[in-house]
Picture 1 (tube, rainbow, N blue to C red):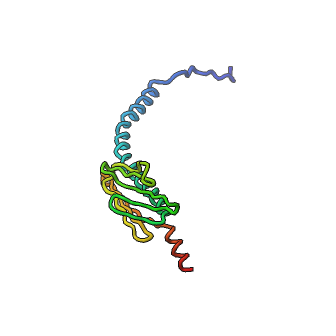
Picture 2: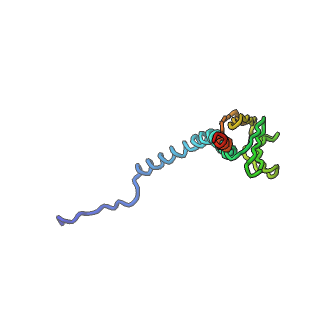
Picture 3: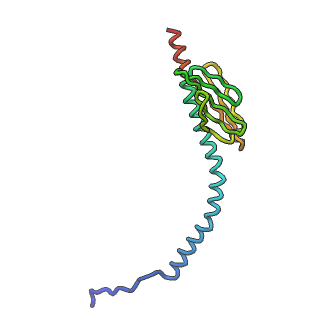
Length: 154
C-alpha cells in the first residue's frame, strides 16, 4: 500500500471555523443599524438637491423655447412660439405647480419656501429655497431672442 493515500473524513466545520463565521456575522449585524441611520440622514438632503436640479433643468428647457418671459416673486410665465402659455407658480402650501394655458396642475416641487424668477431681456435668473434651507440659483437663456437678434442684424 505504498501508492495508496488514505483520505480522512473531513465532512463539516470545526468549532473554530464555526465561531469565526458566527462572530463575523454578528459584527455585520451590529453595524447595520448604524449604517442605516447614516443613510437615512444623508438621503433627504441628497434627494432634495437632486429634485432641485431636475426642476431647474425643466425650467431651463421651457425658457429655451420661449418667445416672451415674465418673472415675478413666486411666479414665472413663459409664452411659447405656438401660443402656449406655461406658468410655474408657488402655492401657499409650498408647492410649485406647472400650468399650461391656465389649465392642468402638475406638481413640480414640494416644500418650497421661496421661488423667485427675474427676467432680463433674454436671460432669466431663478432661485428656489426649500423649507430645509437648501437653495439653488440658476441663470437661463431664451434661445428665440438670440436668433431674433441675429436675424435683425442681417
